[in-house]
Amino acid sequence: MKILNDIARPFRLLILNCSLLINRSVFLVFVQKEFYHIFRDKRTMLILLGMPVVQLILFGFAITNEVKNAKIVIFDPSKDDATQRIARQLDASQYFTVVRYVNNQQELKQSFQDGNIGMAVVFGERFNENLLHTGKAQLQLLADATDPNTATQLVQYASSIIGGYQQELMAQNKIPYQIQPEVKLLYNPQMKAAYNFVPGVLGMILMLICAMMTSIAIVREKELGTMEILLVSPMKPIYIILAKAVPYLALSTVNLITVLLLSIFVLNVPLAGSLFWLFVVSLLFIFVSLSIGLLVSTLVNSQMAAMLVSVLAMMLPVILLSGMIYPIENMPTVLQWVSNIVPARWYILAVKGLMIKGVGIVAVAKEVAILCVMVVLLITVSMKKFKIRLE
Image 1 (tube, helix red, strand yellow):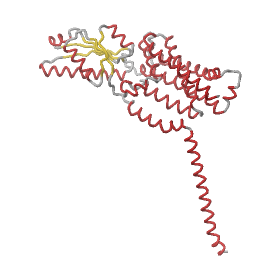
Image 2 (image 1 turned 180 degrees about the vertical axis):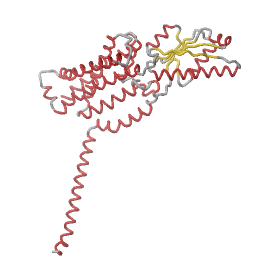
Image 3 (image 1 turned 90 degrees about the vertical axis):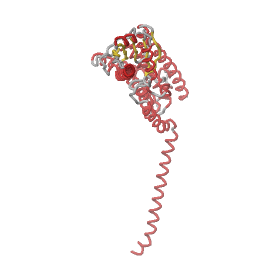
């Protein structure tokens, strides 16, 4: 018996090694198959390999609370040597860019309402004369406080530059000159953070609910194979898509009302403008978001891919590139160009104007026009690709 076991042992080892080799080769075949499945889906590969690069660039360049190149205007009725020197020092700094000189209070007010500037410097009359004869002169720093953090930094930077000019004069003339900046915070004198994040939260909620849920709802039908059944029904494809979008339109409207009620009665954010136009602009943004969801549904074939695209390709741009948290002026020029195609940027600007600044619809006509163009383009491209993919 022992002799038989000794003879059979090499055969058993050989069989065991063969089985291990076979199992290993089968395992490698399965691994190879999985790689083929991943590489075959080019869109998923783009998300897996491209998204980390995009996120690194965005987080590396866009996330900074340091204010640079902030646009300001100057109201200078004196136009003397002192005011000109202060204006040049402000413009020469990395923090400010003087975009224009205004001639009256109406132009100054219009600049703030248009949302083109973050701060204004208003010199008093006979500024240099008062400074030389009395040793004192006054100027105003008017800051747009709808973004409290940015307004605070702008005032601090401007006060530091003006203080530096004052020290320079004192060192030259040995006279205790005193330039007194008077700070005035517009639209948000109490510096409440809610004034800034409410428009951003509105944009993010509406974008995610409309875009993500619409894309997932349509892709689910494609993934389950029921879309073909719907298409052979008497209803036209456009009505099928609208039927998918209408419930999310209704839910988004409810969310819009809820957020506005909480903002006004709980967070004490004022509704300074027209409630009617605020709803109109919000509905327009909802249509943009629904159109994006429709476009995403034509580009992917699985619910997971739709969710990834919705969260990564839409949520991050809303947070980083819309001006919701980080000032767009701080970003590199390329990212500032990219931010122009982020719908939430224009919606947030319009909501700040209508809700907090109390401007009319004419003042946000640019933002409304851009959102309208986006709706038309997105719906046109989406419907064209939808028909092509399902034929």
